Length: 552
Image 1 (cartoon, rainbow, N blue to C red):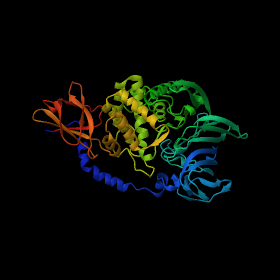
Image 2: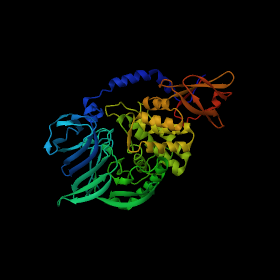
Image 3: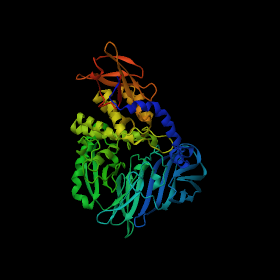
């Protein structure tokens, strides 16, 4: 008689998954606009961005923006034509090169510029784009991108940008591809007098333009991805303190609405605890030169580099809830912890293509568990990870298609965290695991990466081959099933059933009530040195391994 310790549909899934995957791919039709935004053509790879100066004026009453962006670049090939990006609802007023206007054309959200002569490989040069218009308004920031136009309880303007996924070109001109992070940047924002703008990096100058407008200049000295560049406009009160971090004093700044100035202690406590935990697990905060800020926003939150957007209303949990159902998620402020975790995974280590956004979200989801581990212990951490399984859909792969600016399944959050906890369990050496996490942030410091970079590094540093594990959990939608049989002599034979060809993964199992041991299991039946009188006496670690078990 067959006994199932996981729902039968998991087994049946393997019969139909390939057919369903083909049907899903047939429905996944991408437009020319998707390709122009997501593909690295020679018109985009011919130049490497080294510096931007974004200079923009925000007319809040009319929800209108105008300004310019200076593109400084190094030619990586000979070229006389290039592409930059700006959403078609915004006007390109002119493109200036060495004081002269350049001809340009547009296709969807892409802009093509023709230079009067060939720019030779290796040359450092620049051009500026002047633009204006009514930017896209985000109806549900940060999940849809654009400007979030709000007012605070005193009726003062409270405005922010958020554009991850949709693209920074929704509100400012740039080379809008995650693979090319600008080396440094100046962000100059003119806003109505009476409110201020907070952006990434450090405030270097406040310029009074006239009685109506004041311009705030923010300098970013570390590489930054386009989608992280942010405006935050409001009637802010500023608090500053120093954190004694691994690299020395780190400036920590809080910009909160005037009405919430007496609630700052909540943010201070959570920020300190977060930095303590993450510097332990991941290494030094990656942007000491630009500082660390929490900026209050009307939307829930976003990992804007060195200027984390915060809108969790000064409460623990995720708007007061704990998705894990364990209670551990109610002991800290989810937005402070999660969005700050992205400073290491997302901002320091950035995926080259949006298809690999799972790198950002899997590690950052797991960072929540490591925060719990640091402050409350490993058992609490693993309970939290296990509790988060209830949010997994197994609807499609965590990895999206390349070259079309498309991420994979939302499972990249909870399933990604489960995957990393499982890898930690397999390695079974927490000091080595910590060294791997810190090593990732050191090796790929301020760099862009892809799927192979992450997998190969973990393989090399762990001494184990996780290639098929990542392939199954990241590139397929189902989870593997451990098929177990009892031999006539009582010994156990088992194998994996999985979508990834030649799947193999170690697993901890043993007799109930005894210490579980790790065994390497492949897709072919093998006999293990474990004997039972009844299969029900076999204990498989399904608490830390997200798998199905089929007992024959």
